[in-house]
Length: 252
Image 1: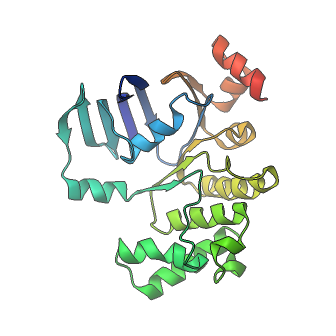
Image 2 (image 1 turned 90 degrees about the vertical axis):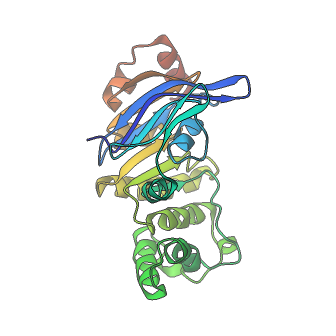
């Protein structure tokens, strides 16, 4: 059973076609890396999965449950909003920007959503937050404020914050693109550990080394469509389409 499935997703911004029929299945515990040039629709597609962007055509399933079906901009089916909310809580998301609350400490940032959304007790939320901050290597920063942290540390707090909601799926939207090069490795190492622990992950990334090493499957997007997909070995060692060959030459 696929944990996420999309069928023929189209998205338009005015007259501009961004996504032109994206169909993708992601299995439990699979790591799928989406690569491609800027403007290819990678981030837009990722954001449609948790309803941060609209779709105009197509269907989105999570755990074999149909969330939405649209045709020519008209909703043909939508799951009840309470059920949809519960399903979408199973998706954690880490953005390019860290989006931490500057007036809250590291541990308060991580505790906030479980308390307010999942209604767990402060004691439970704090215990979980301490566990997660240890996981991301920030056990010594619990009482610091975000402006005292490096970009890499802030992004690791953002990962811990997403994990605090105990999601089944983690979505990463170019999580290292805003970081100085020397800080990229510390974030990728946390993501690699999550993959090793069996977290289902969809990662939009420019980090080809990470995609080659960690992904079960790599998807190459350009012009709002999936041009090619396969194992890392297939994509990086034996790319079939001339466009993928050209892209890899430019980034490797």
